[in-house]
Every structure is written in structure tokens, then in C-alpha cells.
Image (cartoon, rainbow, N blue to C red; front, side):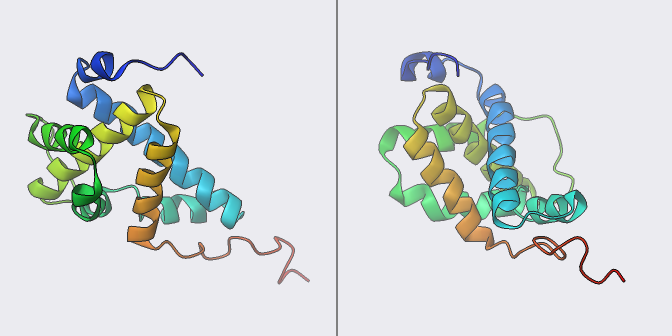
Length: 147
């Protein structure tokens, strides 16, 4: 992994760029978790991951963790939420999309600053929030049912 940035260096990065990175980090974390817990068909894993990595789920996680965060992390969440974004939410309310951007910005910030424990805590909260079930067919023997 690359050398972590200082908090001051990371805070100078555009919030939408932090959210761009945070989205990728969140997606990788969720996919890794699902694959380890329920190895199975990629399509089933993709659908399960989509149930967690989406604006509505990320917005609920934002709301749940907000009061548990130290002030610096809370500020990043709020700044990410309030960042002017020209993209429109496809399958979410504008409010959920903005909160999701804040969540992703914080994930990107924690990743860049090398705060692995804080990042894992945050991302685990998204799993707890969404409560993903085992994907249908995941974890089963691929030969099962074949005769």
C-alpha cells in the first residue's frame, strides 16, 4: 500500500474525489466480506453487494454512525454531504444521495490516511445496517442438485 497521507493533506483533496475513492473501498470491502462468507456465483454475490453498496443503505449508515464519530470525522461527513454534486441520484432521494456522498468521502479519507481500524469499523457498520443475507445459491456445492 502507498504511504498514508496526513489528515491535513487528505482534507485538502476535493470531497467528491474522496467519495470516488470511498465508493471503491466500500465496494471492495463488501464484496470481500460476501465472498468469504458465502462463496458462490458471481451474479448472486453482485446482487447481494448491490443491496449494501447503494445510496439508501449508505445514507442509513451515515445517520446511524454520525453521533458516534469524533468531531473531525463528523466534519468530513457533513462536508461530503454538503458538497455540490451535479450528478443526479438514479435510484435514491436527493437527501440519501448527499448523505451517501458524505459516507463515501469519510471512507476515502480514512483509507488515504491509513486509519485501517476506523475504516473497518465504519464499513462494518454498513454491513450491520443492511444485514445482508447469504446470496441465493451462494456457499452451496456447485454440483448439488445435478444428477
